[in-house]
Image (cartoon, rainbow, N blue to C red; front, top):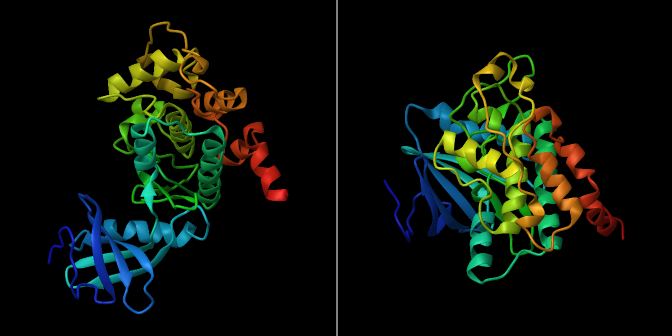
Length: 301
């Protein structure tokens, strides 16, 4: 049975379905209500076929890392007939939609709001990385926001366990605009790709548009080095370093792109968007950056 648009039925009969929130190759996400408690939830209805292992991957990852206020909560998993339903806590919108709405309203995101948003995302990432996993597809679409300003990491279908002795090499991961150079250059990678994506997202919150809007991998690399400058050292690529040569372009200072942004914000973005993965701060280190000092002052007052 396929559910489209506004549907109310006995399908996953514990819930009454309302609007469709999203759709992809995996299936659909619906806003729904628990018939007994009235609680609002979001249900991801997956295609339940022979590839059950892929469908259950997100469930497995969430079972390992979801006990954190900045990672979306999976409430239950329901298997009925030929579908699998993942019942999540309901969040009001994605960060992508929020950015779009701010831009359409000809407004800007205040630095106070951007700081608080990034602080929450980094806390979720810190928990995830310390639990041995990294997201691999961090982007505004996969970050959810509540009306109260709570930000949560979602859509962990691409997340994977990090094993230092067996680095990841799968290249067709992550959304192009937020894909780290080491992935684009077909090198091994780890949790530092999430930190690169975090830098791109932070810049997008100030710009209200993607920082590196490439259309293919080669163009994406061009967008990166034309913005942050050509790399002066590719030794981190190992034996593959000789395969790449970049024209000598200088970086465009962030201050020319963004007005009324603090020097601490510029410094953090520059660190996160380092060519060399080993020079990017970890989530723990980023949370200690002076940019977030006001967040800790609020927590202690």
